Image (cartoon, rainbow, N blue to C red; front, side, top):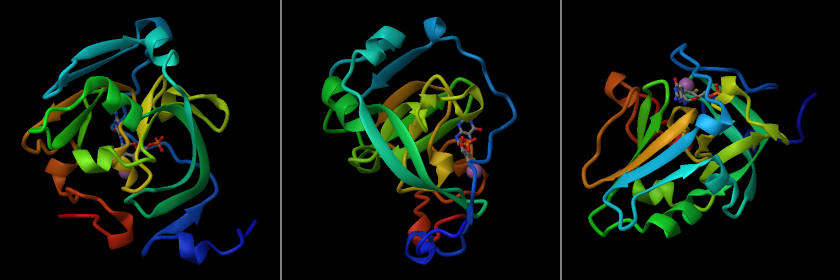
Length: 190
Ligand SMILES: Nc1nc2c(c(=O)[nH]1)N[C@H]1C(S)=C(S)[C@@H](COP(=O)(O)O)O[C@H]1N2
Ligand SMILES: [Mo]
């Protein structure tokens, strides 16, 4: 089915795919809810560890967005819910010298974002996708969703967030991917 006008929502060099492909390094950790936790540390006023009950006790936000992968597929109208990065920031209070956020996945994956990208209103720590609990293959129990950047910035199996003064390029940023990764500027490779 053709959508109304994909042109104005399709960044340059992308094509629309009907589904949401599964892409990762091949190790897909299974983390039961009761074993999952999210550690937040680095240059913040209040370091903390959230377990599943803590996460679910936070205000929940819904988000419907298009996903753009650097390998050129785009997936329209994905619905996510979870805890917004803005809420998360209001809890931990980054120090003034914090300029970068490093996301850590339980598979050993890392990726990096400038703090202002992480603070955007549409960044979510998501635990549901299209109305269902986030599947393990897509990074469940909890993944990051950063709609404004290529999808490799959206760390799956999210278990750690650290705030840093200087950038620490991650799994793909050190393997030739662009450090910023804005699909509208086609920032694919460095
Ligand atoms: N922890 C972790 N997060 C990850 C990856 C990974 O290998 N490990 N791959 C990234 C890449 S390259 C993409 S395109 C998206 C794919 O997410 P999906 O499998 O839900 O489509 O996850 C990103 N987040
Ligand atoms: Mo990717």
